[in-house]
Structures are given as structure tokens and as C-alpha cells.
Length: 133
Image (cartoon, rainbow, N blue to C red; front, side, top):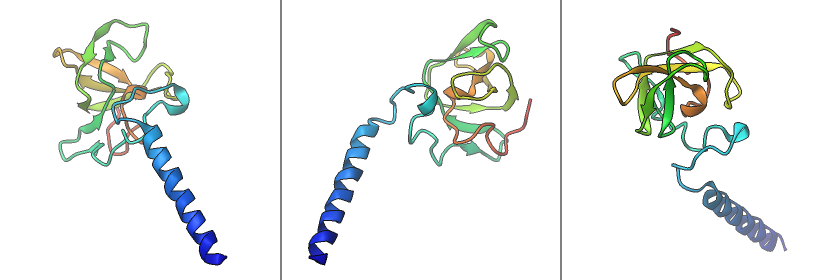
């Protein structure tokens, strides 16, 4: 009876783990909303401040960079790539990520802009070790 119970628990655990992996979908899935603002797996071990002092991290492809740390300011351009660097962070408007942290970077069109943290796949905001602007 004990062996049967252990086998049942092991099979249930494996089925649950497989179901969770399947439900997570591809790593490029778009955020569903505030509760899951940063997709599981996007805050990868690769995300962190390197020796150059910049945060290198995954981000939402197509994220917009704004002139100021506010959605009401002018859009300076996009981040078309899904992995970028960020020079520093600062407080601004609250966004769907549940905080008011924005990251400063050079956008893919060469302009500089502020990207809301909801679009940068860090595990915590502001990213540890990154300087404040």
C-alpha cells in the first residue's frame, strides 16, 4: 500500500510539473497584466548589472521609450529587440508593473528614452546594483 501511494504521488507530481511547463508557453509570451507583468522565465539569470555598470536584461520587444518618465510625454522610439542594456533608473509615473521605476537606455533608433519597468524583465525593481539617474 505504501509503495502504491508513493507511486501515485510521484505520478501526480510529474503530471503537475509537465502541465505547468506546458501552460507557461514560450518564453516570448506577452505579459497578461499586472499580476503577471513580467512573464515567468524572462527574469533570467542573464539579467543583471555587468562590469560596465549597465543592466543587461530581456525586455518586451516593441516597448516604447519616452522622453520623460511618463506615458504622457513624447515617444522617442522603440526597443525592437528583446534583450537590451539600461544605463540607470529613476522614479516616474506608476505603470502596470505595480511600481514607478523607469529605465534609461538608448533605443533602437539611436534616441535616448525612458522605458517603464513593466517592459524590462528584471526580478525586482529597481535592479540591484544599477545606479539611479
